[in-house]
Amino acid sequence: MAKVKLKEFAFARSGDKGDGSNVGVFVTNQRDYEVIKAQLTVERVKRHFHAICKGEVTRYEAPNMLALNFLLRDSLGGGGSESLKTDAQGKTHGLALLEIEVER
Amino acid sequence: MRDKVLIGYGQGFWGDSILGPVRLVREGPLHYLALDYLAEVTMSIMQKLKGRNPKAGYATDFVAMLDRTLPEIHQKGVKVIANAGGVNPQACLQAVLELARKKGVKGLKVGVIEGDDVLARVPELLAGGHGLVNMDDGRPLSAVQDRLLSANVYIGAFAVAECLKAGAQIVIGGRLTDPALVAGPMIHEFGWGPQDFDKLAAGTMAGHIAECGAQCTGGNFTGWREVKDFVRIGYPVIEASPDGSFVVTKHDGTGGLVNRNTVISQLLYEMGDPKRYLGPDCTADFTSAVVEEVGKDRVRLSGIKGGPATPTYKVSLSYQNGFKATGQLTVSGPDAVAKAKLCADIVWGRLALDGCTFAEHEKLVEIVGAGVCHAGINEASDPPEVVLRLGVKCADEDKVDRFGMEIVPLVTSGPPGVTGFAGGRPKATDIVGYWPALLDKTQVKTTVRVEVS
Image (cartoon, chains in turn purple, brown):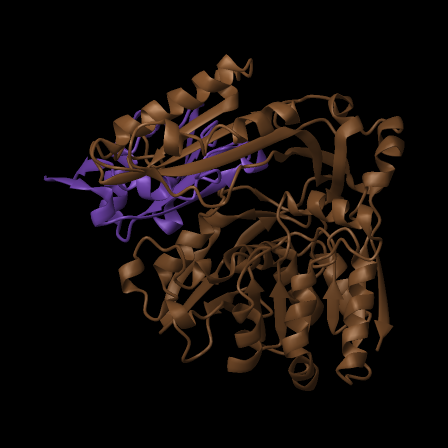
C-alpha cells in the first residue's frame, strides 16, 4: 500500500445543483473502485472541502460506471446568478476532489 | 423505419461556439441536429428583451447559425431541433422563415412548440390551488410574486416528436429539456410510446450525454493530456437504434476523444441520485447502463432501465432578487497576498467612512492566484502576483454602485504594485433569483404549428 493522490488514477467531473455542486469521481477497474468506496467517505469529503462546502454531503454509488457521486450542499455562495464567487457553478470542484490522497 | 438514426448535438448552452453546429452539418453524415440555447437565467434576460421589443426574446445565435448553414441543411434534409424560441418562439419562427426567403430556400417547413411559458398564467394557477412553492426551501410563491421575471415549464420529448410528425424540418421550442432534443427524434423515428419507459430512459440518457456538446468528446476531461486536437474538437453524434441502445461517437477526422472515460465523465455531470434521474417523460436509472468501448471513438450504451415519470412538471421561475457588482485589480509582488488583503480592508474601511456598510454575507473577497477555486485544499503562500476580486450584493442599487467607485482609487492611494484596472468602475447588475417548483401535468397543454417558407 502506498499513499497516492486520486488524480494519479481517477477521473472526476463537477457541476452545479442549485446552491450546491455535484462531484462525480470514477476509476477504471474494480480494485480501485473498492479503494475509493472504502476511503472516500462522506466525512472525508466533507473535511476535504471544509473551506468550500458549508452544507451537508451526500454520497451515491454507480457501480456500473465504477463511480461515486457526491452532492456538496451550500458550496457555491448562493449559486447561479446569486453568487459572487469566481467558480459559481462548481466547475473546478472535481479537480479539487482529485487532490485527496488515498492508500492504494 | 431507419435502423440507425444519427443525432448530432451542436450547441451545449447559450454562448457555445458556432463552429459546433456548422461543422456537424459539413463534416459528416447527420439526420438530426440538436441545439440547446437556454440556461436558467436566460429566460429572464429574454423576457426583458421581449418587454422592450415584441419581436425579441429568442436566441438570435440560432438564426445566425442558420444564416451560415440553411441551404446545406435544406439540401441534405437534416432536421434541426432547438430550444432557441426562448420566451418568443413565434418571433423566432418568423425570423427563420424570413431568413429562408432571403436565402432563396423554398418549401422549408418550420414548426414551433408553445405552451411552456406560464408567466401570464401564474395568478390563475395560484388561484386554482397550484402553489408553485419553492422546491428547495418550501417558501410560497407569494414571497416573490411581485418580482417575477419568467416562468417556464420543462417540456419533454413527445412535444418534439409531435412537431416532427407534423412535418417540420426545423423544430423551435421554448423551455424544452435538453435531453428532449435527442429523445424526441428517437420517439418520432422508432414509434416509441409513452409507456416504453426503458427506451425513453435510453433516449434521456443519450440526451444527457450529448447535452453539453463537446463535454463528452474530450472537453473538460480530467484526462485532458490524452485529448488530441482541441482546436477541431468534434461535437457528439448519437447513433440511435430502435431497441434503445445507442453509440456515442463523433465525425471521422475531427479532434477530441470519445472513450469510456469521456462518456462516464459526462454521465456524472450535474448528477443527483444516479438511480433516479427525473424527467418529464420517464425516470431513468443511470446505474443500469452497460457502457462499453466498441471501436475508435465509439462507446455503446445498452440495457438501460426506466420507469414512469412523476405526475408533475418541473417549472423554472425567476425573479428580481437585488443587485450585485464585482471588480478586480492585479496586485504584484513582493508580498502580493498581504497587499491584496490590505487593499480589501481599505475598500471596506473607506466605504464605512462614507456610511456604506455591507453584512458579511453580502461581501466577497477573493485573492485569485493564492488558492480560490480550491480554497483550503491547494493554496499558494507567495505567488508573484494575484488578482484581487471584490464583490457585493444587496437590495440597494445605489449602495452597490457606491462600492464600485472605491476600487480604482487603490492604484494611487493603496500599497504599491496595484495595476490592471481596465474596465472602469463596476456597475450594479440585477441578481436573478432562481425558483424551482412543480406543477401538475394536467395544467399544461403544449401545441405545435408548422409554417412553410
